[in-house]
Length: 636
Image (cartoon, rainbow, N blue to C red; front, side, top):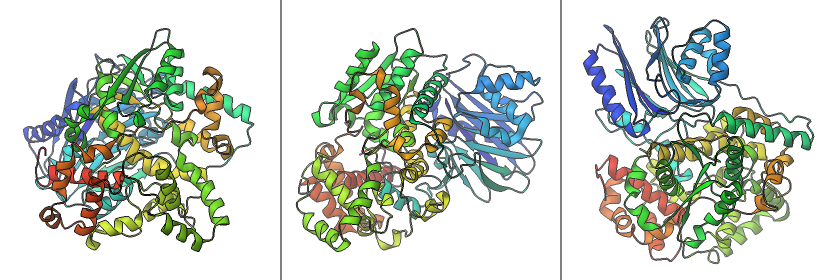
């Protein structure tokens, strides 16, 4: 696990100048790889090329130092991530006469590329971002994994092309702070994150998952190509028993492949279906007691640590439980939020950081249950498809509008409880008579109408999701398969995976997600939808496949998720800072927000007149990012 950086300068730079730029970029992401660094520089009369990396040693601790070259020194690679099937691929190459000098997965990638070119990228099972400089073709290739587990940012101008694992390496290399991207701003205030290919900055982009960039150093042109074609899912004719057996086999195989490590390894264990199954599979794959890690809150409404204790006892694991409160976070909250380098307001980022921090004191690698909801259909929001269809067939639109109007005051919450009123309100506002409801469901911060109220008209972007609909060839998301496809492209890449990568790597911890396996994804896409959601029973086939391994009914117990009581914190320890962000002079100098609307929204929340946790938290996180990057406030 590492971080990578690179530069192509469209002019001659001396080696020491290139080295200085790359060293600076590297030092900014030392948390991603504190064990080693590596730099490659090459100067020509009209162009200069540099690549660098920071390494967290996981596999091949002795000989895996990067950059790695082919035997003729004509091709060089820097790599971030893990290739889980590298031993299989290596055996194939050795049978074809290819020789190796290390036991690292990085050398397997470059030897595969040397023999088969970009076609080899589709054979890699793993999480990765890497760059390959091919001197023979005079081209650079930059690649990102199938799900987008590892990040990759890039920007291009008339004078240079930059790429990096984290935005900070690019921003601090430029001699100016880029303008705010209107598209990125709108995406953030709808979703709480910014999905690829956009960022919060103009002309800085994320490479989309399952794509590679080809940069021609002769013409200085770029092209972006999809690695694995993703055909429209077609349902296979398979019995439920056969599908259940195959599910179990694929999950076990994925856990085994993602358990390869030369350093200590454990699991995140929340007590939910996904993390419990991953922990079970790992415990059965080894003859030693595994380490499991969980986190809970002193506020009872958010604490579910009792569930993880049940599983830990069942597995007889070395269980590590950390109970946290506001005091544990208030001294770290600034560093956690600004480390994302752009606005990011998933409330689970804070406890994920603390869990990663505590876990890293014991192990270097942690398996997680991330991706289980997307792969097997486990989110509550997937119910909405069925609900919307039934509701709109029974309730006329005019009556629904009347219900919304008259329920407005009844559904007001005074604190961040996220109870029955919260869920009813979310459901009522998700109903859509045009069949386009799912795009509102994933808008966790503001609906389309709400964002139109809080942002000044000059900053509003219309048809916000159209490009994603075009990519998915899906104007309306109407089925469970549709919902999962939308989540893979937006919510998983931009939200979940960004959260886990930044918070874990901030603590030099590698997280691996066995459910994020291309074979497993394609298999579940091929199943009848009622295998995934039977009636109102989510993740049905996954639970059925493993239910005999757990106490009766355990996998059917509800779990609320991994949030944090940020609504309370905004009213308490963060109140003074939040109030500074709604001062008229500050808002007017930004020119981004409708001052009266945003001030009332925040003040009503602070005064407990109306709980607006998600909306106010997204505003707070934006302002933290803005103050740090544009006002150069290191802390508030």
